[in-house]
Image (cartoon, rainbow, N blue to C red; front, side, top):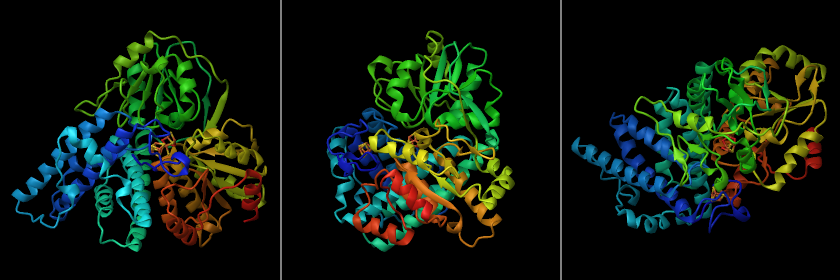
Amino acid sequence: MFCFQCQEASRGKGCTVRGVCGKTADVANLQDLLIYVLKGISMYNLKAKDNGINKEDVDKFVMESLFMTITNANFARNDFILKVKEALDLRDKLAKELEEKGIDTSDITHDAAHWKATEEEFDKKAEEVGVLTTENEDVRSLRELITYGVKGMAAYSYHADNLGYNSEDIFTFMQKALAATLDDSLTADDLVNLTLETGKYGVDALALLDKANTSTYGNPEITKVNIGVRNRPGILISGHDLKDLEQLLEQTKDTGVDVYTHSEMLPANYYPAFKKYDHFVGNYGNAWWKQKEEFEKFNGPILMTTNCLVPPKDSYKDRVYAAGPVGFDGIKYIEEKEDGTKDFSEIIEHAKKCEPPVEIEKGEIVGGFAHNQVLALADKVVEAVKSGAIKKFFVMAGCDGRMKDREYYTEFAEKLPKDTVILTAGCAKYRYNKLDLGDIGGIPRVLDAGQCNDSYSLAVIAMKLKEVFELEDINDLPIAYNIAWYEQKAVIVLLALLYLGVKNIHLGPTLPAFLSENVAKVLVEKFGIGGISEADKDVEMFMAE
Ligand code: FSO
Ligand code: SF4
């Protein structure tokens, strides 16, 4: 195996024996193989699209399969074996259909579009199609940067699609980008351009998900979220899928079972539509990487709707349920029914037999500062900037992770001058959302917009402020970007911000292992991308900018 798609890539280079995330070598290889078939499918499906044939089932298959390969989503060998088989069938069916329609596919010659193997041969084939098969380091770097961006785009498109919002343009782009990563005629410059285009479609995907979420559940509003517990059994729901949460809340009504959010599901508490449920208690625990201790203490069943799953301990494994792209050998999977709904009754019955959660924290945290809410406060915010009460905003969106060097973000937040405000989104927030950082004239110093996709909200806020202050360039605003990344959704968020023209983003705790020296240089020269050093020094550096 060779995998370097996330921030925790071993030794900052890549995992080669087993993933730091817990992914086994055979699963890593099968993920590569699945991506490889998806590229073959894309070649045919783009041809179909060129000829006016639109196959939504293929679009969705590609999107869902991409999502399964994201870090910490699916660790189950069998899920990937089945998916690769399905993918090969789909690819060959598509090729046949085109042939029957008299569409010339003779220019589709790549092995990804033609290879065949029995299930027993999958592992061997998988070893031949991994990341390292692209020998040129820079081309490999760009190809993977694009692929990871597309994985992130697929994840966000998946949630929007669950709520009935999708875009053919986004589907087509994902496949165009996938196919392009096997096109040897493309130069490094072509791939740089494709990377920027990935950012453009990233913006579209984020905007679509924002529309899906807010049209379905209302605009997030300032909310105090309880982080303590009640004395009834509970179900803990994690991941990012709001539709799953809605169904769980509906199905747990009047059952005597409470529902708590975990990690990236916390922002669900900010949506008006979920406030009507009395048994929706609040949030339990912290960012994904603390789940081993926290799931143990929760006592009740846990529903993982997306990543980030940490390989569960035997002591609570029987309480973990998977849905959507998630998978792990030996945990129960809740299938989606034909009509698109899910039946969570098994989890609810399980919960009834469990003890209530052990209290690990008490009190409340405040969030709900997505674009609509912040813009409703715009007068107050603008006034605070004009009067000098707020000197600078710090966008500290992104992800958290288990590495010790992420303590930097807590320290950085603590050391920021009192006249600064942190704008956050994603699980990165758990490094500072429980600190007492105070407020500025009633505006809290940590404004949480929501999940990692709600980083889009922060960009909307920035664009609005640019308008209000009548500035030419978004970079003239008093906003600095100190972003923490972990997995591939953060890659699409980063590419989206670059597409929107944001410069001088600092990325940490380390730069991606998949950026070659030359590709990193392009990002530095074109966009002023930088790393981080020490909290003290960085606070000083940012404040002087
Ligand atoms: Fe975090 Fe995990 Fe939301 Fe990611 S829970 S790390 S970028 O999945 O998607 O922020
Ligand atoms: Fe390693 Fe990250 Fe890949 Fe897991 S996802 S194998 S931790 S690089």
